[in-house]
Image 1: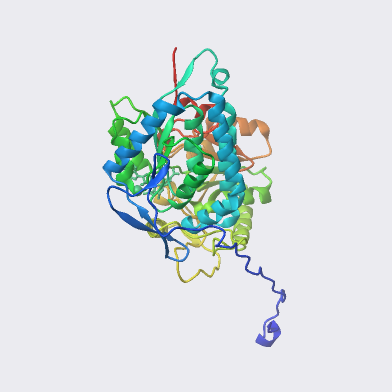
Image 2 (image 1 turned 60 degrees about the vertical axis):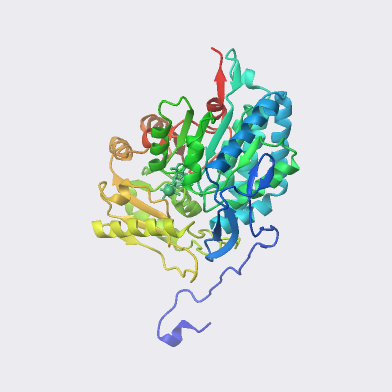
Length: 493
Ligand code: NAI
Ligand code: MG
């Protein structure tokens, strides 16, 4: 290293140390060139005869050809699910159903590394997150619901719970395996069979999961996986022999599904977007709060429905928080998702990158002040530098609309009343965060914030025993916990 003095500067820091690359091995997981649809316990060619290419968003390189299921394919999957429901799954002793769920959970744990690598390659998320968050939580959901499968009578005493039939499940690309687990585990535990569609940009872990089902010897047709884009999803929604739709994704599509199902008698749960308020009071432990703010918005590139995308800071600590936040942001490592040191990976798709870019431009145009730490991005792939906006008015699009990217909007407040009013000033109501030392204030805020989940002195924490879901345009119905079983059960009351 050249001493700084030679350039005529007086350097305070002359030592430089950096992380050596620590890439996870790619060859632990084998990706096929081409995949069919998983229907009736085996892979079949799509009747539509259509495939599309799924890519690695960090390198813009093709990974595999994946089927685009059409109407006839969806019908075939629903038939398989109906038959398995009528002949096998609904007839099994509940403790037998539990046995399969336990097996799936254990195999997922055993093969977690394989799944984590594939999740990061197909979706762009850092391996540290897919390894430490997505996969352990996915397995935990199967373990948790396995435990309920033979105890439904105790979970819902005197209500005679029974399964409802075939569930159509449509999931997004931000947590592919975790959303699959959230959907499939409670449905199966309750005795239903499933047709699930992963998102078009992230189908590969759901297809690998079919191999787990084979290993677990799950009876054919209990779980069917059909790949494809929104058109495939719409076919599942429209199919007359599906008893329930569970959807996680955009509010726009959620509304369209609700319109399509009105009057059909089909059950529906919707887990949609969010614009969560993360509220920091002046008595909060500031360094801990800054960690929570960073985790709240930069975790998974901000592709998180419950991301803490609106930060509300009490005015008296505003300068301290902003300077600590900027310092912390400068240490975030953006880059190769498979590197174990990476904090922020690739944006999931070109479409999502364009959306983030245009919303960030709107923030600049409307007059907010942008800060991005110095950061060298890889040349290929879809990337966005962690961004924070200050001087944000509540009316700006960046304070109102879900960006679903690593972009934080900072606003301020003086009193708890003002914090509540501003935090609730959104069409969404999925989650919120409160940072304060005062327990009574936490409880008071949790009462008044219109959000399905309120975290206190932490953020983005998940546990299968804890229900999750929204208010208002964030949707309805709960996933996780006992609440998450209810949408998959009918009751003789
Ligand atoms: P999307 O809502 O279009 O996609 C989610 C899932 O729904 C995918 O599997 C997709 O194939 C399917 N789908 C799309 N159109 C459908 C239709 N008409 N009927 C049935 N299924 C359909 O979300 P997209 O376009 O990927 O992202 C757009 C925005 O939505 C994001 O920028 C983000 O703001 C939000 N979003 C929110 C998520 C959440 O977790 N709440 C997840 C994904 C996106
Ligand atoms: Mg869409």
